[in-house]
Amino acid sequence: MQTFALHFCKLLLAAALLALTACGFHMRGQADLSFKTLYMQKSGAPALAADLKRVLKSNGITLVNTPDEAEMQLDLMLEQPEKRILSLSGGGRVREFELLYRVNFRTRERSQDLWGPVQTVDGRRDYSYDDTQLLAKEGEEARLYSDMRADAVREIMRRLSVQQKASARPSAAN
Image (cartoon, rainbow, N blue to C red; front, side, top):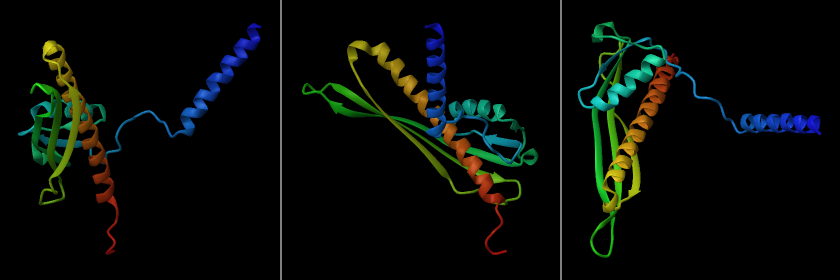
């Protein structure tokens, strides 16, 4: 009986692993970035800059102190959290809020004289509101903004990765 249970568990584990690989699942690894040094201007996004620095360093990118030392420059121009009323009760009390989070940034490679176009990353979350649970709802709002900031960091890393691959391709004119 024990050998049957052991074989059944092994079969179940193998089926689960097969299902994970069949669906295209793979663990998130390091970003494929072709530059090794980066200068970050963070004039408009101090909260995002701290999270982005941590991710860049974990991907083997060295953050330098001057633009002249960097292979790539990143200008975090704007980090804009916004809160809007989404719905009201019949008595005029707020029932739902909509949280918006926008980041504008641009990049420039060492070989380029001009900055690239301004790129935007947007996030949006809704949450129900109850003024009798004020502290809990403030905590929920902070977690939602933190999640949107983490999503923005991942999107910026994806765009840096894609941008590098696109600039490394030979031009069609050759």
